[in-house]
Length: 413
Image (tube, helix red, strand yellow):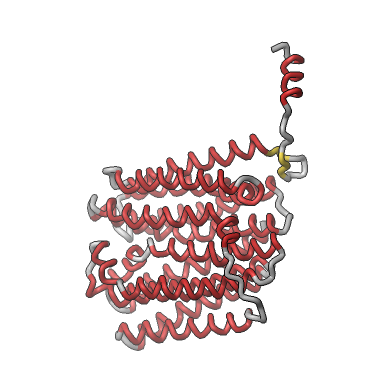
């Protein structure tokens, strides 16, 4: 549990400070609508997490499972190159993106570009963090995460207090955090042989990769669908997202710790599941406190906001089980089966989110897909594995036809 909290604190800083940045920046610039950039670029975060899964998490699992010392630095190098192209193109074509989201291009353009470029820098930084976590340097990773995010927040807000020129604010902030990340990269890099074979990365993270792709589609089109319902639903969606997004990011600590333990053959299913549920109780409690403290400040219709938050809380607990089991099944069961389940569940969620004619479309898609996914993971685990007294999961032996006949005879069937 202590390790889970340490990793969670690093992810907490990684998620909280960007949210605070938008809220405080809106105050210092005297433009409350600036905070809407968080919602505007929210779908792009799934592109960020997709690249992190491929070139960060997958590469580190590959190194541990296949004893490939070149995997991590090779994937980091390729990831930086691919990330620069992807986020560079997004920044270049930001105007069509803003228009698609039905927002004012002139007002949001500068900080939308800032948000996209910041995500690229955070992507490179996340590669370093993943490397440290999988080397079991949790404290060091959490320390760097805290320093990076405080530095980003402090420079952005202090610069906005000195000048209202958006270009200066953006340039100074991006330059400072970029220099910090470059320093970390220089510290981590050593002599290595470039390996362009990243197929194993996809194998180890195929379920996460599929999920990220579909999540981008879900929110890119689903939010557009939901926003058509009116201002009260837009306010509720934005508010619930603000008070749960950090918790969702921190929840990834469950998956990170499980994958580290699995890749090092230290995984204990019973302990991991109990710790995950306790960890989720802490996270959901914080969301409840924030909701009842701030819903009036953000002019949120109480019942609308509460319905949306209740669905998020249910999914938090379901996810604490799923994150554990799918991490285990990804490395100890059929990658093909797990990936097919992930694709089917996410297609189902995407269709519901995009086409349901209700402002709760994304929430309904979320809760239905969550129930199906958790049920699938539990069934697969119970059928093919058994839990030992020490909490570990062991593959069940296949029962031969003769043994089945003998059992049936003993049961007088």
